[in-house]
Amino acid sequence: MSNLETERLSLRKPTMTEQYDLWNILRQEKVWQYYMSIPDRFNNDRKAFQESLDDWSKQEKFFKRKIDNAEEDSDKYTWSIFLKNGKVIGQMTVQPNDNYPDNPRIRTVGWFIDPKLQRQGYAYEAARAVLDYMFSQTNLEEIRTEANVVNPGSWGLMEKLGFVRIGESISSHYDIDGNPLKQYNYMINRDMYLTKNKCKIK
Ligand SMILES: CC(C)(COP(=O)(O)OP(=O)(O)OC[C@H]1O[C@@H](n2cnc3c(N)ncnc32)[C@H](O)[C@@H]1OP(=O)(O)O)[C@@H](O)C(=O)NCCC(=O)NCCS
Image (cartoon, rainbow, N blue to C red; front, side):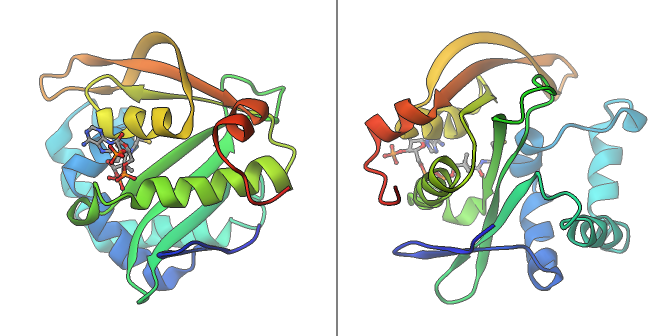
């Protein structure tokens, strides 16, 4: 996995140094509610989950485990996203798609950006670098992923990147009343990506 540079951003392999700042972004409800599924043990109790998320001493161990396991977990590509001044503003991942366990060339994506810095094109800029890299430097053939209907930030980003909506399904995320959300299903493959975007790397 390579570090990636764009005009305004540096995308780097995660280290423990920036995890505290990332945690402060992730634990905001407007970020985690779509980025994370509430683990079953919380019985869909958002308040209890939020309390657990807010406890850095617990979360630090979880972040550390993820960093320590990154080498073994080499199938999961994760970049921390930094402004050029060194401030971390989010993360982007390309990882195995559980719906296609037998086909590692079909993957899924995940992304979040600090709410204070959203709508400034940072996710798009980072995603272009990540997808240029993934479609040219790895054997990735296709991305299949979902976004909650009520989360136009995520599916709008996908559409701007050239993903195509292929259906609807039920999300693993819930609204504040505990009802499961609907989600759109999207896909893009290598040819579609390269046709839509002028990929710098061949
Ligand atoms: C999804 C997310 C990463 C987008 O980050 P961002 O930096 O704000 O996105 P960008 O500024 O690069 O926007 C790219 C495109 O996405 C769409 N978009 C982004 N935010 C949007 C919003 N709030 N409403 C509608 N469309 C939106 C637009 O089409 C935009 O292009 P445009 O500015 O030319 O219109 C950010 O909203 C986020 O972190 N959300 C919380 C976490 C999350 O939902 N993750 C996805 C689940 S895995």
